[in-house]
Image 1 (spheres, rainbow, N blue to C red):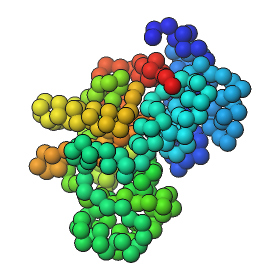
Image 2: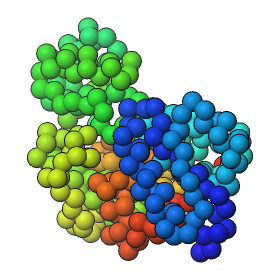
Image 3: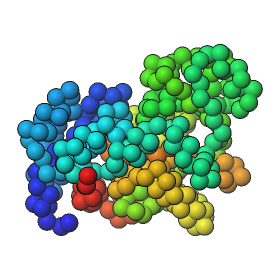
Length: 305
């Protein structure tokens, strides 16, 4: 769609009430600024308890979702917009809900023989001993329904696992514990059915945590990613399969680890990735020859319900 006036009135949703609110505010501002600079009739909404009433009163022609985390990325907002018959960007209700749930995403990938790290679900402190005996250490601890690496921790002992579980309880009742994969970390952005150039992440932090993602200046983003062409093609194919298996559409991002033997392991799928100055999808789009404005317009053009 080249005529931006054809988009009509566009609401950019950001902020919200999840733990990812600060990142969402930055993503929303970047998207809104780009759309307005391109001549789109766009305005912002900091999504609060009155969001439904605002949307009913405003009746936007399209919605660009820049809400990360619960309430924006988990299918609930998508369901609201479908009931209001307002086209929106990104994945639908089912894929959004699944993508926000790291455990059930793994169920789907495993059923299709797509490789993902060995794991356990931690629901009580008393489970920690058995998990360490079965999976060994080190391990990575993740709240099942959070993004942006919030509440995550690497642990090297039973005592550290117990402490990490207690910390993760602040964010989620269920905690995913995965076998630690030592090796390179990659992310692959998906846009309109194709994989954009992969990015390799390099950080002096223990892992690619919240600070490394959004605050630090010592994180390295390598694109080209340094893989041989056959391995990069394998990574792109795996990421597309993972994205499609969950039922995602439009745009998103798949995170992958590679062990020292060269095997890839799927970590998670992100259905509303960050769009900040530290974010990965804009970097991948730039490597593919797309400006940030090109990217947001392409995402917006795919809005549907």
